[in-house]
Structure formats: structure tokens, C-alpha cells
Length: 311
Length: 311
Image 1: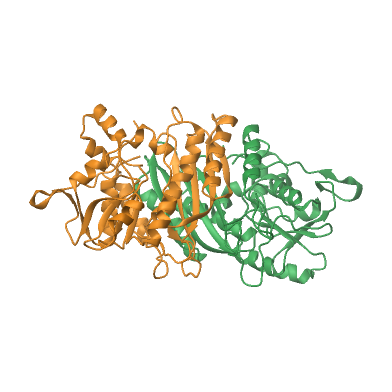
Image 2: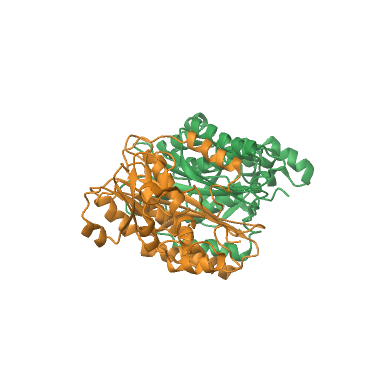
């Protein structure tokens, strides 16, 4: 769980290099680096996909986390990518490199945890690759998804100046447990594709940095309302703040793995509709200026800071 | 690179458990455990997919192998799965957990090696997930593929007693270098889907064990012609044999990662057609009896033995 700013410079450069090497799909498809990518670069199928590789000691800690929850998380982080594009999961693949020290019962719990989630989200496990080695366990899940009829994938790049910036729930302090127990916002994502939201991203790295990503792709800035974000501070962020001594709001902005959705919507969207969807407005898109927080002349820049390691 | 017989009992049981948990796709789709799986369990799309997770010290050794070749292998093993089903690759995803010790240039070579292969096989890289950790590098590639018009995927389960068993090239000793430098038999796989071959598998674990897999799925046995397999012993198998003291034929039967195709074809297939395709007959499917080698009454069982570690 490195923060973006903590990433080795080489890794950041590599990610940028890889993005330049990605095939740009047909018009309307997700651009390189969005939450999902096209499977068929030239269409006509509307299937999308994504993969996430989780590593023991980085994305989970097998000394303290239950293997069923770890297996569940490996799929749920991918389902959150489906939600972030407003798409319905279709199926998944599981690749395992299991630590040789891992006993059969724990490995079984990992798989069962994943399959339980797969069943609830109608995202059946179709196949995979099982290996073992003398190193810590690594788990890759690939998920396929598609928009429901009458909708299009909601991308990071569609936000416009003046759009309202919304969150689907309170944030911060997920490391106290919610990074494992969260439920991906798949149904809400589909509702937001029907609205439609103009742009969307899930909070994996943190509200601040993920809003930066959305702004970068949309060519906009955003101003966060400090009072609104304070109403979205999760109780876990307050608990974390008691330990770290940081403001709880900082945990809300800079902790990661909340897996809530940040959605931008047309400012004419009726507030009652937003309330029905459980969305809370916490900012507004601007033409320029990056991500800032504050009122009027008292705005302050919001750094591109991501989330922290367990350790 | 564990042999199947060397796999921890827990891992073998887990693989069997996982297979039971996989969704069975619509009729005609690949059953659980074939080289590719369906993406859409209920159709109508004909897209298939597969994932392989390669690990430093197991599937490659970064102390001796070039990173460009390692990146290329990570995609080629998946393209070989496409070939084994007689399908054309569509696109791929790359997930990386890079060792923190890995320098930027090496990581770049890894990605460039993969992208070079992706270009040659028209299997563009669409996205992925880049991470780093303090452990050895792990690389997951997911590939999507589909049959070409007028063909169906060739599965492991279609062989019938009396079918000829063919190999696409000489085998054994791939660890001397061909496990990295091989070219997946994608074009040949498509030709075999057009023939059509009755069943197919690529030689990843070894001729003996992969033929066992094909027999298991087809509900058949197979008898190997010892003279024919001796003509298919790769020069590398002889070189290996000089070092190990084993018969070169054993290296041909039990070494893995040749990535040639084993195809079964109707016995009425003209020998000239097989010759045009570069296929060499080395056995015949039987109604029962597992995999054996020999003539007449002198047949001997072929053990379910797979391939060895580097070390």
C-alpha cells in the first residue's frame, strides 16, 4: 500500500511508460489507465476488464487477517473497479502463488472467501492458475464486466466545470478493518451510469489523490468544501486520529481503501435524487487550479498524497 | 516448476477443490480446467480467457535470464494456451509485483519484452496493475482470445479411440533455453481448429503428463510409439541427457515447457495434410488403459510425471 508520493521514482516512471504502451481502444472506450480497460480494442463487444495483484505484507497481512477475508478482498477490489465504471461484473479468474508454508485449510478459506463474494455479485469464477513458492502469497484476480443495456461506462474523464462532486459514504481509517470488510458499490455504480454521472472513480488510494486522478483525466480542477468533507469523516478516521495525532479530516482525505465512489454529476441533478442514491456533495469541479479545499479566497491546495502502509 | 507428483498434497487437493468451484459455461464452452475458460458463462460472446502467474526463482531466474525474455515469456505462455484451443489472441492485461531491488531499466526491459511479443501476435496490452514489494518479482498476464470464424475452440476432451496423436515439433531439454525463446504455436493452432483436430493441449508440464490430461478429459487412453517419440527427441534433450545420465527419451517425455502442441486427429486425415502442418504422429488414442508406450504385448505404463525445477 505505498502512497503515490512514496512510490519509488522508478516505479512512477514505469507506470507512465506502461501507460504510453497501452493500446487506445475504439472511440468511447476507456482510455489507458481508467478503472477498467476494453477487452476488444476494436469492438464491437462492450466487455471490459481489470486485474489487481494483492501481496501479503502489502495489501493484506496474513499474520492478522483471516484468509477468507483476504480472498474476498482480492475479488472485491476488482468489483470496486467495475462499480467505478458503472458496469456489471460478468466473471473472474484467480491466479495464486501460495506461500509453501500456507496450510491447506487456509488456502481453502482464501478460495472460499473469494467464491462467496463471486456468488453474491453473480461474478462466477471461471478458471485460473495455482502455484506455490517459498515467498509470501500473491493473489491476482482478473474481472470482466460490461455496462447494462442503455448505459455506457462512466469514465474518469467526463467531468465538467460546475459539476457537483459527490461521495457515496464516509471515508478514512479503513485500515482499522474496512479495507477488508467493505462491500463494493456495484449497484450504486449501475444507478450512477443510468443517471448518468459525468465521471467516476473509486476511492482506492485516497479521496485526495483519487480526485486528483479524476481531475487530471477530465482536464479540470476541484474545490472541496471543508464543512462537507468534515461531515464525511468516518468514525474510524476519528479513532485513527486519536492514535496518530493527525486531524481526522486528513485521514478522510489521505487514507485509502475506502472503496466508496467519487462521482461528478450535472449541477442540475435534483438534490432529492442524490439523497435517494445516498450521495453527499462535498465539492464542485472547476475549470483549472488542481484540487483545493476551502471557501472563497481562503482555499488551500490539497496535496497529491496517497495512503500508507500497514506497517 | 514443480512436477505434478512433486506438488504438495495440499496444493493438488486445492486445485481439485477450485476446479469443483468453477462455473461450468454454456454447452460447447470449455469445461473447467481446460487451457482457456469462457469469459461470459452464459454466452452469447465467444470470448475466452486465461491467466498465468510467473514467479522469480520458479518460472524464471532473474539471476541468469534477461528481463526482456522474462517479460516475453509471461505473455507467450498465455499465447500458448490460446494456441492449444485453436484460438486467436485478442488482447492482454499485465499485473506486476516488482521486487524493490529491481532497477528501472530492468523493469522497463520486462515490459518492453512483453510488448514486443504483444505486437507480433496482435495481442495488445490494454491495462494492468503495477506494484512493488520486498519479495521476488511475480508477473501475472491475462489473455483474451476467440475462435476465428467458422471454427470452434478445440478442447482437451474431444479425442476418440483410434485418433492419431501428433506433436508439432521435437521436445525435451527446454530448460537449456527454449522455455524462454519458444514461439507459441498460434498460427498452427488456428490451422488445427480448421482441420479440425479432435482435441489439443500444449506441452507445458511435459508430453507424458499433458497427454495424460488430454486422456483424462477425453475418457480415453493412448499408446505412444517408442520409435516415433525417439524421432521427436530434441537435440537439447540429448544434451541434457549427457548431463543427467537419464535416457534422452525420458527428457522428451517428462521435461516441460516445450510449448509444442499435442493434437489428436481423425485417423482418416491424409498424411500429406499432417506433413504440410508439420505434425508428426507419435501415438494413437485407445479406449482405455491410460498412457502406455511400446509395441504389441511389450507396452509399459507411462507415469504421470511432470517437469523439474531449475535448481
